[in-house]
Image 1: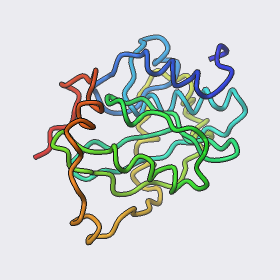
Image 2: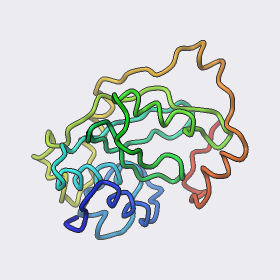
Image 3: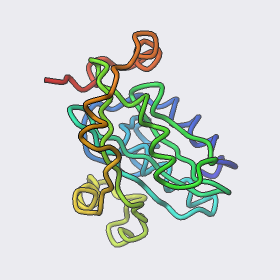
Length: 193
């Protein structure tokens, strides 16, 4: 992590990692050793790397309906920005230009759809400062980070849309879907029912 001088370099590192299809989260040390990461691993890795750059290590849980959830590392540098590992091309980083956390999360709304093109993002969590998990050595432990996953299930979440908004949603366009799933590990994509 000492090589990173700015948040965009962390994103470039995550983009080079092979996508890990299994769920749960692993420590940044395990990610560096294996060169594998899912979105949860990537968010925790990015939070640790951002901490080295002087930012608080924050993650935010994005909750989807009939799709995989997503976890991002969020930071403030004038505005809110994010770093994320994803099995799709459109759910990765965001530059720190958003005035609020909600505005940042809404930037993920349109490109957050399942393999049938149904827009699926429904809520997001309050930011979680990973320093609350220092007792479990979240940066270097070899064991899965189940405590963080459990905490994300219980932290406050904020809805993004109403029922009438959901009923009015259009499906993602075919060209956007192709761009989103370009280079995806198809076996790691959520299969909607």
